[in-house]
Image (cartoon, rainbow, N blue to C red; front, side, top):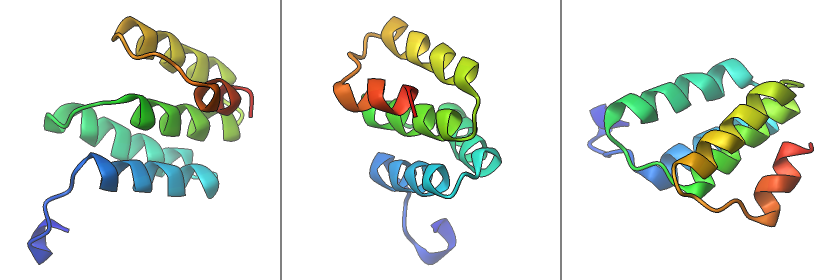
Length: 88
């Protein structure tokens, strides 16, 4: 995207995480998640929820719960969508 002159933002990262979650591609979602965390982009509850969903869908419940706890520790309030994603 950067080569095309488009600067990625949180909305684009969220779309990528959601797409990889839907496709069951946890490895790809984790690559995006790790990039977001190290790029200085702002994490938010939507990004956390998308990553939690990716973990849960890939049967990584423990990882999903760890992210949920991290999300709360960062001061984000989980929504019903977040809890539903955790239970996927």
